[in-house]
Image (cartoon, rainbow, N blue to C red):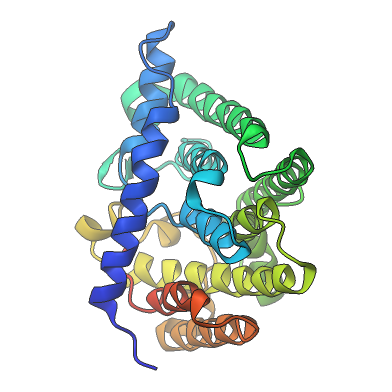
Length: 300
């Protein structure tokens, strides 16, 4: 089956706009002290594809409940993602000056405020996830399970663990197995939690939930590999950050290990594995299929 990139981008934009309408409304505004709330808004509102909250909604839809039932959690997970980017950009981490084409949070508000902005976004995210327990169609038990899922995914054995490994290996050649482990934690863990969270809130049965877990694992790898490719041959004005930052930070990537062609072949293999993971679903999972294909065509 061919990939209709134009049609898919329209679907993706519609879903992104749905997320954005809710996301900014969940941020505190006109609240004292103003500087931290301005910085939170800045960190969340400066673009982004909103893939993780979209995956929350898709997991819920496949489980049979509407987007409104999980929008609190979808927006919470995007706040977590934005917090991780604010901290990633810090001078003590990747030391980046641009994010999505705009000055990074610490450049605008200072390093200390950026640290606190990330902390505040993380705290707000857990407020929203807890509030999802009272939404019609979601059981408190499912909400508690989902919160535990997210907490593990972003903790020391998940996303933060991956960030630690990323710093630990900086300037060194990473063996392939360790590179995969790093990205399964740093990038993949939140993708898995996103898709699983929506499905858990919708009460999805175990086998389908496992299939979505497999999909998210392979999707995260495909996304990271193409991210490495874009860091080498992307266009700065499109990807919204400096090209070559991985090389500047002496990071091992799929491209540095296998070359551009080898990395692209690996990305294609990961997309094929995404498709295989969805064999138990029908047409209702076509958006997820196209989302995996899109990783091979994305420019940012």
